[in-house]
Image (cartoon, rainbow, N blue to C red; front, side, top):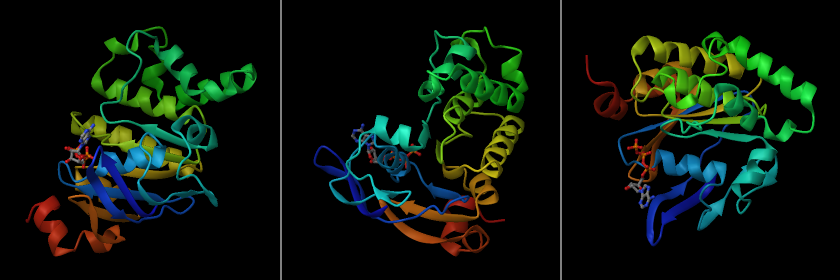
Length: 233
Ligand code: ATP
């Protein structure tokens, strides 16, 4: 993103936001409630189009490209609150994620098998309706659904939200596994500790602007970050 402005109606929620995710990286975007993290992710995924600035993906400008085309180009979004299809089964949710392989059944089956291997809890529940899964299982399903399309870039919005610490550890392990398998990750988290431990670099958003950036090891020592997001020890 280069100097991007995103607005709801006339009110800008992000101003002059610039950042990058290199191939193979996990990058964290941290910040308080309402800082503009979800808005920025929507901008990356194309759910909101910028008023100013440019968005480049894989060497091509995608600034005005709609969300469905960005999905086909390799950008997958796991939205805040998971948003699985509650009335559909686990298997059907995963199939929806693999929509771009719908005419290639063997490929779709192979992808499904990969996801069920990655998330054994989902394998036990393939015919269960997604709405009846626990919060942690729904987060796994939302992640699995996004990974079904073999995205180049995975955008995760607050994966830890409302989940018990042990479940969060599992989710972050899966994010790292997806990254090791070749997917770059843009990770939005209010829980800065989790985010900075998982990513290699990070950006801090405050009231719609980036106020700090750097390797996570450096950000963890930044006084503003410690004060606002990590809590002093
Ligand atoms: P949180 O961690 O609480 O989700 P966030 O950093 O993701 O916060 P955003 O959801 O991006 O923040 O919100 C940034 C600003 O945009 C806030 O002031 C918010 O009130 C506003 N905003 C978000 N969504 C909308 C919307 N649909 N319509 C109008 N304003 C919105």
